[in-house]
Length: 114
Length: 113
Image (tube, each protein chain N blue to C red):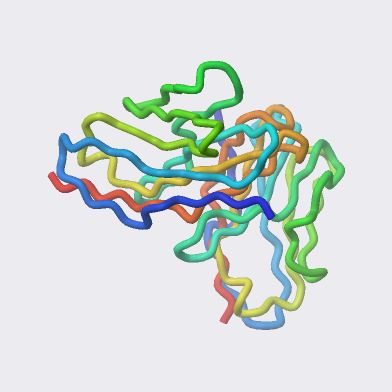
């Protein structure tokens, strides 16, 4: 079965530190890739997405992610985190021939210390 | 414009009871998805609609779960004979078309006692 794996369950950083959250998926076909964020008390929001084209995609709030097809990875990065980035981050994959349903990773909780 | 809305925001019920959870998608969105999120986990797909028809219900855990979207807009997720293991946050998302970006609602937190 297809799956999405996020390597870190809980990451703690100080403000201005750099961030990289890992995401790997298991599916050999065409995929669309997403990172969603859930701030405390809020609902899931789209951070960025990859459908095709340039494998380096930029999202909101200074986040970016790189799709490396050979590694089945879609890691999220931010050069300098802020306290307001404290949230839970979910990587998700949709399979091209399966109607857009999303397969999510288990999530990474990010805590940024001021 | 208005986002996806879900009602109720919280629902507490007793084991064995029937519950209905409602989702109002973004106006004009033809695709609607239901997911379930247990504590400490990512959302898990349940079912999605393209228009009025359920295009894929492979994620429904058993026949106690059923969903409808009779007019191609509002959808209702129905759970019969609820069990304690059904306790979770039920999320709804909609997109302009299938395969497009999904926008999520705030969820309904269901607690089965």
